[in-house]
Length: 110
Image (tube, rainbow, N blue to C red):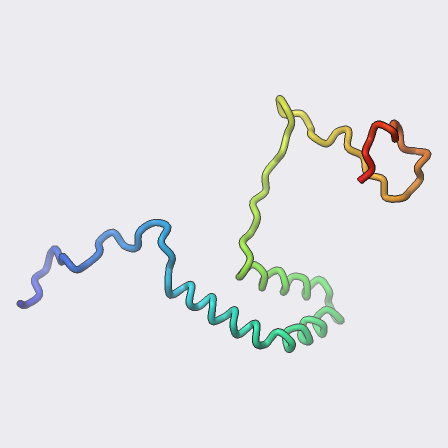
């Protein structure tokens, strides 16, 4: 049966269903992760060299690598009732001057 232009019953005109994994992309990620895992000792040495000259760049490189494997966390704003600040009465004591803390009996030390 020769090809006839028009509708092809074997073709998926809708593409990949929404939410289904992209198998090729997943295989590439796994291959890259395996390569990175095998080269981890060399990567640590290279990052240490970069950090010796430019710590900021080393951190940036680590963040870029982590973005490939760890999902980014979304930011959310937490507010109290009617949009009030949840942390207005929260105080931290880091072992500093304890005589300056007001109501130290009422606030829990963290």
